[in-house]
Image 1 (cartoon, rainbow, N blue to C red):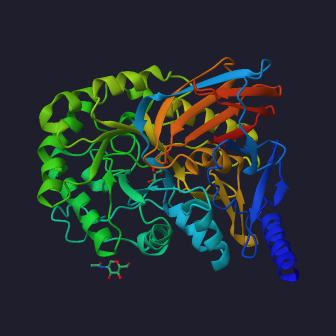
Image 2 (image 1 turned 180 degrees about the horizontal axis):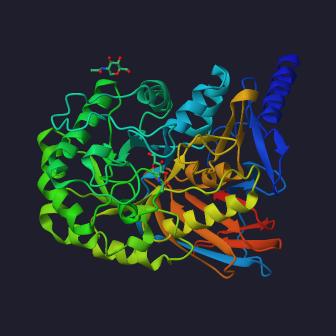
Length: 498
Ligand SMILES: *[C@@H]1O[C@H](CO)[C@@H](O)[C@H](O)[C@H]1NC(C)=O
Ligand SMILES: *[C@@H]1O[C@H](CO)[C@@H](O)[C@H](O)[C@H]1NC(C)=O
């Protein structure tokens, strides 16, 4: 009896400790504070026994992954918003969710005390955390670096004799990626270059308007293979590649961050004549190549020529999309792109809020999740966020391009803060596993966002976001005689497992 009491006391104390340690800053909700000695941990949240449903809730008021279990009903609630899912109407298979191992992320992470670093890794890369399974790696520098550099800054070195990884790889990227991979062994890693060496470009600069000088088309393909080889030699094997981050940015005179301009036709020709054959000859044909890697206003016209030419299309596996224009270009463009290339997958490869950090902004969390669900409801197989972590200013960033991230690190305090965005992403990434299949869903209230999935185990995962400003009741049905009835606060995010 005494042992039982002790065990119960221990269980309830660990449960209490799992909660968010809230702190209020300048915005409408809280951040959850983690340090060397403490971090909130939702643990593994499993499907309930049949006849019940699990309701996981996060709210502006400060609930984070709050777990409750209720019996399902066999009656619809007549006063409720009706959500209907159709498990027979299946769409794309989910690949996963993730974020980017930038120089700035790594620099911030390694500045934390070791135990706090472990909390960081657990938060993102374990099934007790939000279960990330994809990671993006900038090939050499991006704006989220402390300086501009490439792996070969010796002008005219066409044979790449001076090619070498840099201290950023050895200190900020490789060790961080390796720890993440230990915790998430299936982690799929893809590389993206921001700019070739400045001397390979028409303008001789890492940024602004410039393209790759034609005689360097082959050396630049060789450079990418050297990067893949160098990372493999360090024990980091890549799964995929985008040939250029934001290629259309490199035609704008005021583009302030690292870039290289590629027209759609040049990209097609470079892939079919240089990059594709070079990767193949070097044994990297298994790499998933994803083209575009820019906002959806460049779809579908940018990818059309390279997908229509079988000589370039043979090397292309998917289309990578950035989030920054989603507000201005509707999701129909995703449907159109999928129809153009039904055998290629669509993956969001970058997203973040710009102009700095807003600690505790619930609005940002809601906006993010809204667009994530929209993408998933229009054929996308996953979502890869930008920096996994930044400092409280939203950097470092050599170009003063301050950004926000789901985790903000305060190295002086030895702390990090999990933003509402972290939990918003987690309501999908923690529960919608790779291999889950998106199914159709409808709702009678357009301010209630819904995305629904068949889990590989045969159970259902439904994610909901109440964007309205009133509390609502929801009655969820899948066409059988099962009804899942529950309430949702204004602004609430909920995941249903049943
Ligand atoms: C490459 O960089 C590493 C780490 O900075 C250094 O130890 C090594 O000597 C460099 N190799 C070459 C060939 O420069
Ligand atoms: C481009 O980068 C250089 C540093 O390499 C910087 O001085 C310049 O201001 C940048 N251009 C723009 C438009 O920001």
